[in-house]
Each structure stands twice: as C-alpha cells, then as structure tokens.
Length: 286
Ligand code: NAD
Ligand code: FES
Image (cartoon, rainbow, N blue to C red; front, side, top):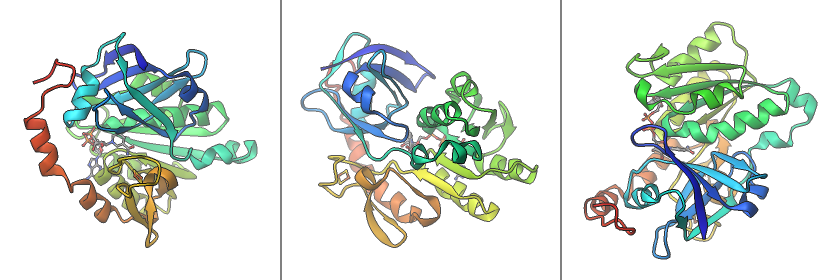
C-alpha cells in the first residue's frame, strides 16, 4: 500500500499529493511517469512525476479529476493509501546525459500549459541544480488556475506568466509569449513543452517557425505502461512508437499530433458515460 503523506488543493480542481513510495523515489529521474491504481479494482492511471524526495522516500503527483478514475484518486485523503503506485516508467529526459560543459552552455525554455506545469518542475529543478540556464513560461486560462509559481521561481532564472484572459502576466497563450520572448532577443538552445496535446502541437509549430528545437512529453492513452498493449502508440517520424517505453518525450518536429489527438479522443463517449454513472469506489463521490 502507498500512503498519502500530504494532500493539498492547488486550485479548486487541481490536487497535489505526496505519496510514500521509497523505492520509486530512489529510482525516479526527471521526465518519467508512474501509474496509480487507487484500489484493487481501479483503472491504471498514468501520471507524470511532479517531484521526488529520496530522503523522505516520497513522490509527488498532481491530478485534475477529469474522469471517473481521477475523481477516485483525488477523493483519497491524507493518511489513506493507494493499492498500487508503479514506476518509475518511461525514459528520463535526454538532458540528464549531457556533460557539465554542455549543460553550462545550454539555455532551456520550458513551456508549461495548465496542469502540465507540475511535471515541468522536476526538469527545471534538475537543470538549475546542474548549471544550465532555465527560463519557464507558465500558461493558464486565468490567474486562479496558475500553479507552481513560487516553486518554479525558485528553480529557474526567469519565470514568465501568461493567461488567456489577461488576468495575470502576459495577455495571451504560451505560443504568443514564446514568440515575443524570442523576438525580444532571448536566445534559447532548447525548448520543452508539456501540457495539453493541442498546446504542444501549436507550441511545436511556433518553435519550428523560430528555428528552435523542441521536445514534447506525450500524455497518450495508456493501459499497462510497459510496452505490451499498444494503447499508447503514436506516429513519430513516420514510425509507430510506444510512448510508455520509447517516450514519453519525443522530438516535437517529428510527432503526428493530429493522429495523437484523434487517438486521445477515441473513448470520449465512454469516458463521459463513466463519469455520468460514476459511483466513487471509496464512497465519497456521486
Ligand atoms: P488549458 O487548456 O487551460 O491550457 C493551458 C495553456 O496552454 C493555455 O493557457 C494556453 O496558454 C496554452 N494553450 C492551450 N491551447 C492552446 C492552443 N491551441 N495554442 C496555443 N496554446 C494553447 O490546460 P489544462 O486544462 O490545464 O490542461 C489539461 C490537459 O493537460 C489535460 O488534457 C491533461 O491530460 C494535459 N496534461 C498533459 C501532461 C503531459 O505530460 N503532457 C501532463 C499533465 C496534464
Ligand atoms: Fe501499453 Fe504503452 S501503455 S504499450
């Protein structure tokens, strides 16, 4: 069992949990994910690792209740325990293989969209601790949905905020702010985008226009997370790849985002029905 040490709501709908999982915390690297099964009958839900603490033996996950199973996860309280937390899964970010000299010469720009801001944190933190220059853009629909502002400010050189409605920071989407920063003379060596698939698609198009290499972290549908079922398949550079074992990070220029979005929406009707008829497994939901 995997005990929830701490639970807090970052916004009315976004929940952060610190979960006891010492072996996972000891092995986790930036860019990897884990799979949570709330109880023994629960669906396997992939979540990006938002932080890990080897001393405390904990991993942090950030969840937004979108479907029936994420609603179950968020209904757990401090002191309760999940049946399974499996990981770390997937490959760590490529940059952890870079030499100290390469890192010192790097200037990363992270583009974080909405809930996708949480998984940017361990990557920015690792790079900052290893001597790279790191800028971060956090974008959200409105000021009240911005997360990880203080945490991110502590691990980056420049934090840029934008909101779709202009209620905080730059008025506009992450793509417009990225373009402005580059046009203002900022020279980045690598972009990394994490957020909704549509945002990663358009951020990649913007990066391409600006001549900036970009890595994206794909949150495809997943079942086993170990390369067995094929649920997570995506087309990258014309070839079928499994996001769970060959990703989750890929070169944005090479990803077929339109196909990935079609596949992601494949079970929308079933998901809506499950949400509508949902009876929370631990008796707190509808
Ligand atoms: P959102 O829809 O509020 O978007 C966040 C920001 O992304 C916006 O403020 C905007 O700046 C930018 N954006 C959105 N659409 C855009 C477009 N068409 N062009 C340019 N920029 C655009 O985000 P949300 O509701 O918090 O997102 C939740 C989604 O994020 C879920 O689908 C979830 O699966 C996904 N997610 C992805 C990852 C990952 O690893 N890739 C991790 C966590 C969550
Ligand atoms: Fe099953 Fe990737 S989730 S192969």
